[in-house]
Image (cartoon, rainbow, N blue to C red; front, side):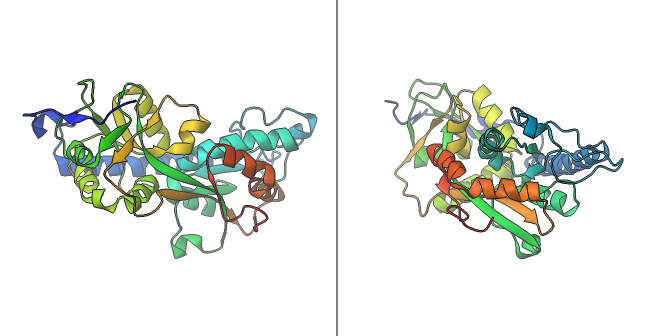
Length: 326
């Protein structure tokens, strides 16, 4: 069993700085970069439409003669036959949807395509612009965002502190977590230095985690404002960095660890009782004029086969499970 880490004496905050920019400027640069990435990805998907929707489907999706038949959906500007429906938005939904898309292809012979991580807001905008056939959300929509959209909540994920493969401990004291976020030197039980990875302000996973542990919110906010630790702007970048930096920890989804067989462990917080479940919904967003193929996939993710697969991966059932309106 791993034990809780102990703080090393005499450590100073200055030794833990990660960026040379002034704190406020570094935070602004990070947010601007995230917004630029979202804008660029939406423009890229517009390019896919203009080029005839040549983005690649999920592997295995065209494994039968039935799958080779062009599905219903958008036609490209040059009149070419439409490609498989394109889904994009929050990267939090990608592990579950990749798994479901493979099952859907095997069961129906049809495919769906999964685009890059845009965030929930970027997915809503891409759907409104017609750049995608359905969007992926991982938070409750604002009333203005939800207008005219059908919401298909197919699963609920749980947020945890995930630890890299070289972290020797199974838990961390809540006070040590606060000190780590503050930039103090905190070591694991083997003497190695602990590191923390942050997500950008407004990230749905961090918000869900802090609803469960509200007393940690000031420490998270201070760490983000001072750019004390690296700030990552997508779930995929958090995943990749946790895996590559073996002694780091960060907020991540428990089920994604299982679905992708990642070399990560859940780090339990000692002396802290969650105020509520650290959970977030995973939702497909459909326009009223969604194609038959889009609606067929939405119905599939709410059906018994998909819900059983999600349950085996540890997801809680979404509101559409068991026959809810897709």
